[in-house]
Image (cartoon, rainbow, N blue to C red; front, side):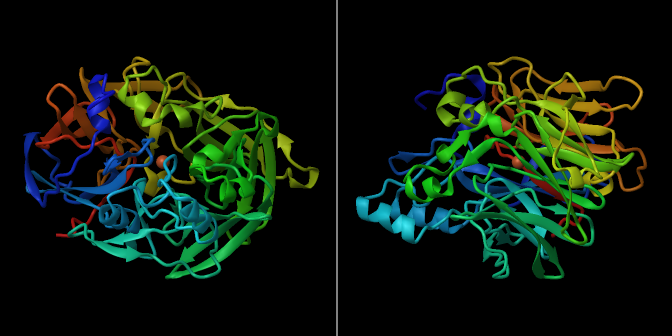
Length: 478
Ligand SMILES: [Fe+2]
């Protein structure tokens, strides 16, 4: 492929092949309790006809499933038949505007796109549960429902008419009773609209006005609160509607605006606190919890938003020196600060080791105090994400770091799966899809989550393009 100039470049190339429950060769002994299914999504097709997608976040979505049981792993994959995918296949060209790629439009098409926009439903970012359905998500409010047995696309999940918005997050939160998410309604007066999904109904929890909405990939949740973090990567909604340029290229870095935190009560929707910090950017909130009269918000903070442009496919395939990792950083937001306006808060770096694609023991620790974060790290600026890293936080000592790495191997997000009877926060395994660049294939790696020692690996007969997120479901669906 032209421009492919690095070992890991294969991870940014198209995979066309779809397979169904392919038995994988396993090295090592899988835990007997691991009998569920890992479901992941990610971009897998980076060109349509003569057109190419420009950014890692743009490629057409494919689902990947790894079934565990009887000491075996079975692998299935399938493109999501979204409207973005089906229209692209019918027309032989990019059909819907993605993160950094727009269809080539005639003048008439550009005018039509302003008055009748067709947002993408290319759900290549995350797999989650909404409304008791397994859904694939991207950053528009159009979750794709799919059959977790067959990976067949069933259609879009329709939100209630009150949940109006153009942009959303692929990282909703759930606390076992409800799910929480938000949409951004772009207009002359834009609104962040946080909503609750409960028993099949969505209702608005809070509405926050914004003149220049922020690009936000995720938000935070503690036991009682949600926290919206507005980074100074901002957009003029009018430009977004009229410029004719791809989505993210309309956003501007406005460091003078700083970073703004708004804390919202999960029960009443009331604004509890607001805080302001120096400008930073992040994709991922790691966790948030309440302690000593403050909300502790932990994010993976970049000093600016340069990473967004660095993740262009031409950069990545050329082996450009980029740093796709960031610093685990804590902000302490006083919970009684609202009456005096937004208070200034300082970032507290928690660990020198930089990571991305963070995971915690979500089912037991989300919104609560926690100690373990797992993610992907980097050993060299020209080597993309080449390690799995565990950061263990301590209240009385510096964080400790453990890593897994293997020459020529490039791991994806490490998904933590707790051992059913386990008590310790790191008692379980990590599941990560790894590209073996020397072999030209990928494998599913199973690590001891406490020590990062290898337990097993299951070899896939082809490469799996680098994806973003997924989740493990204890039921195997089979
Ligand atoms: Fe993400």
